[in-house]
Length: 97
Image (cartoon, rainbow, N blue to C red):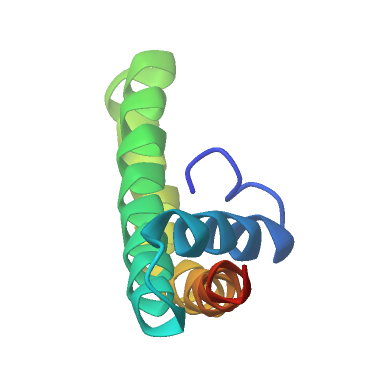
């Protein structure tokens, strides 16, 4: 999720799709796998931006990184819902095989 989350809309769906395929137990398990990958992706993006801001700009950069990362953390539902949708699709594809 962290790698693909920077691609708008399609990235979280693709990451959830991959998580759903890896889960290998159908659409419900794919749903949970995609949802969890979305939450983890949001949290990791927050941590990455905060740490990167601290390295680049010191205290002020860390504060700005925290604000930007916090907006992503608050918007983790975006990642979670799109990951959930992709997870269900991945679970359906995996079950069809």
